[in-house]
Image 1 (cartoon, one colour):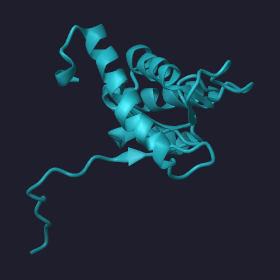
Image 2 (tube, helix red, strand yellow):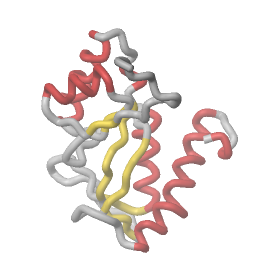
Image 3 (spheres, one colour):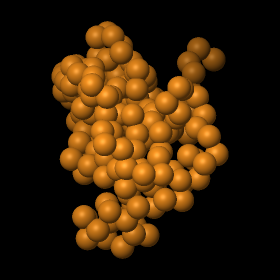
Image 4 (cartoon, helix red, strand yellow):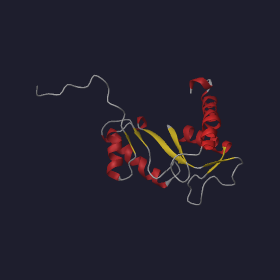
Length: 158
């Protein structure tokens, strides 16, 4: 036998955490999703400079760049009370109350086409149990409800 038969199942999705121009272009040509490096979010200069590289590379090979999903690593504290500022001087998210998180994440989904988020602690790594509880029991359901309301859908369809 001199040929390899195709696998009977589809290939798994390809996701990258690319940062440099060559890897960003490769993301545009072949990846299904991208997680921007250095916890860069949709307001960061890194994202604004990187996403066009992905989109141009996708277009060059006939791909619809909107099919390349973006999920953000999102660090920050979940506080019991609203913070006066949810971003630092450099524009990086630092956290806030449940309501501030809901507002920020809902905006990212509705206005910037974000596909999702990965929560981690401000110092990197796994969030504490209290933050995970607030994330899972308060923030995520409230964001889903806001998205459903905005799109005129029952919450169960989001």
